Image 1 (cartoon, rainbow, N blue to C red):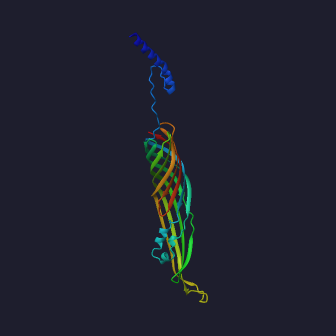
Image 2 (image 1 turned 45 degrees about the vertical axis):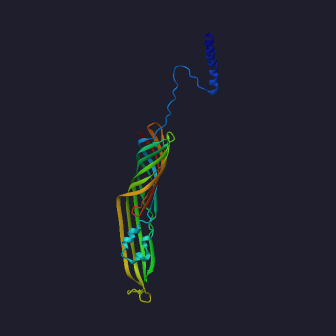
Length: 290
């Protein structure tokens, strides 16, 4: 019995001596004290949830009026052979107008997040004061049709004012902790005031039939067989505009609730009274995540 106890104590002592060596060889942690080591739970910033904010910016816009007079001229000459023979409705009397203005507004949306992927829906509103007044070039052309000389002149003027626009868009982002770069696509709705006016005038003469009035027949003057002048105008206040939008930008969170935004957005509007506007929007904003 004594011999067996001696062997056991010797074995325990040997294990005690070898334990530090094994710990050194395998880099095993040696815990001291009575507290248990518990690894901390990893944390990350979440973009999921409802958010809202305000924004300011600058809009650079262009409105193309080159086709704005077409339907009005066509309507004025609808009962005339001049429309078919000379196609004055295709003449580009008005040009393009560009303008820029400050904007302010707000946004509200909701984000869904899966790991780093963030997908959201957002409403973005902006108020502006954009005025467009295109250059006007009076056009006059002469053409012989069926032996008669048609002399046609077109004058026109136009104006457009855009005051408000709203985009409904889907956002697609990739979260890098507190930094969220994103892209967005959507549809746009806006309001505009439009005023257009055209005057189509001219004469039709017969070069083969002299004027019966003096001077004498040795200096014949072509006889005027027709004189015409048609005016047409369109005025619409608060007309609705529709288009599509695309945007790129980023959000950066300062705290769990406050974030800043920088963004570029392009909007292409459908033609309104044959006017085609487009916008480039630069914005900076501050938002709250709930």
